[in-house]
Image (cartoon, rainbow, N blue to C red; front, top):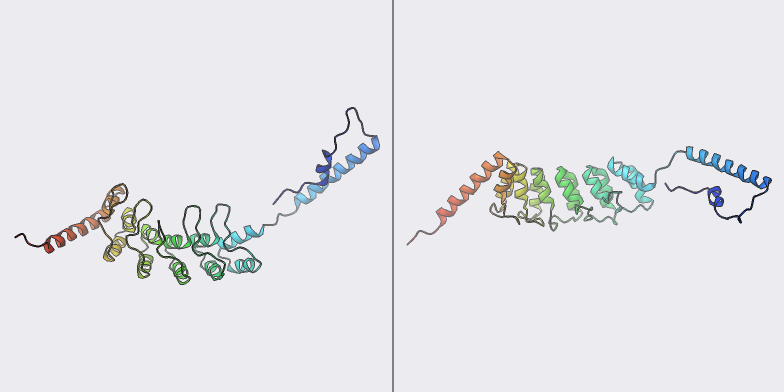
Length: 255
């Protein structure tokens, strides 16, 4: 809420008196009364409860999945693409907080940009995938949100937390299994990093390349070793050995 200057504070320095000038006593007494009145006014108005700005009310409603308040604010012209003070758009905030009802209300608004990102480049589908929020991911897909976001993608985020159901859903909608982040990290590497063996198996069965390396030369097995995930190391090592045997068996015999 902005500080509103009182008229007395404005008048106090508005006019500079000539050097040596002294106001008559009556004028001085009048100024004193005005100053006192202004001080009392400040005390009275300062005691009044501060009303939340519409934007603050909207952000709170999104966090707490208060769909009634969100619909009210939208009907009064609130921008569905506004951001909070951290630069997070309402739809991304709803995904982060698992506010599914609010998410529905936002995507139903024709002005909402379902691909809008926060300052970190994360969109609503990415955070919903990270949270394992199946309903939110389905909602976004139904509204035409891009499954194969360039760079870090929803599949990376689902794999990072081992959300197998979300991984399966994204693959069903043609998510690129070997999607590369800006530094070449794949969803399989993220699954290995977190020790999510079942997720790694899902990705491998869908065709993920176990031998792909990122920009610093690490593959999924290297990630599992580096982050000390013994089950992932065991599973990925077994898969690599299996692939090597299959390749050896399919190689043409030497003449």
